[in-house]
Length: 253
Image (cartoon, rainbow, N blue to C red; front, side, top):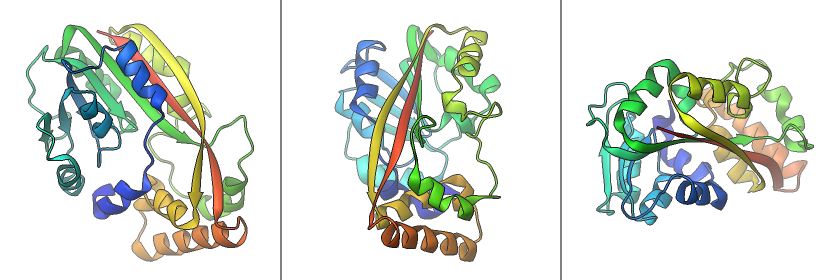
């Protein structure tokens, strides 16, 4: 789905706040000696920062176009190994990683199958870090979302929508219980609140990467994106703000 527009995904998706990488360094020990497994890195929004830390990264990315884009962008890094398998099918040596990460991707996996496998792949003192960018802050006004919600109403819900009324990334109780149930300890959660600034073209590219839009037939998708871009230009003067929450969970093997 995302691979059909890998270049748009690379340009449209923002990175993550610096606080995420502080947590990975200070709590999870990310550094030059780290052996990191990244699950479904897409086009590498987080991979770059993991490599810049000096870590060696195995990036498991099953989508051929996204994997190609990742290699094109970051293939010059000697510390990167791209595995073009699904995480479920990836053949990786047990107890071989100090840190397993998933950046805005873990909701695509079956946690009941993925978490036990992650534990087998982690070294005895290893860490798991899961984080997501959630576009929209329930506690703050969101004028652009309100203006464009009628366009998106009725589209299929994505796998990160959750079942409790909260996006799954913000359902702290559910995520904590899930991690504890599969043997992780010292679980901590933190939310980083920040503002994403976009012009009309950037807003179009970002929304084109949302799963409920990306999966639509071409004509319907383009009509929605055209209207989103028009609203951004005419009603918001070409500048919009999305209040964003980066929600990160860490757990010890």
